[in-house]
Image 1 (cartoon, helix red, strand yellow):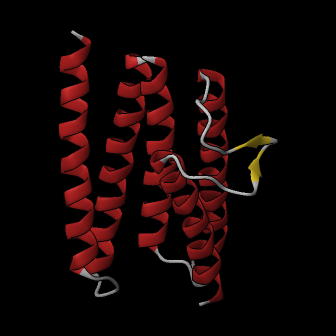
Image 2 (tube, one colour):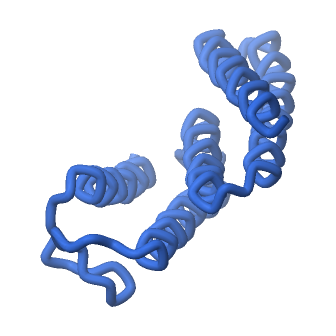
Length: 155
């Protein structure tokens, strides 16, 4: 239970930071020395913020990987991996790196496919919930749609 609380707290902090940035709000804290304010941000500021977001998402993912079997669930792992990959995709989109976006989406499709296979084995053995499979099926389908659109856009 304690692990989930820490993960949720970290995710909440990230969400607050993102919402604040997107809405043009201010924070009294700074991220890596760059104060978030009402000023117009340069591309370098935005890239730095994305890089910090990616690092935080990766830390959450790494922590959950360490805690699997000790309170952290598969759903948390899937969610953390998704968010970490999506942050890298957003940075690639910001830079206009369409090939990187496609590569990241392909890796996410592969991850979901592998997780789905493993979850089916667990469910068939009576150790898991079909709801998790439904959720991963939704994520897999959404990611395949996003990948098809990215490939179409590249052409």
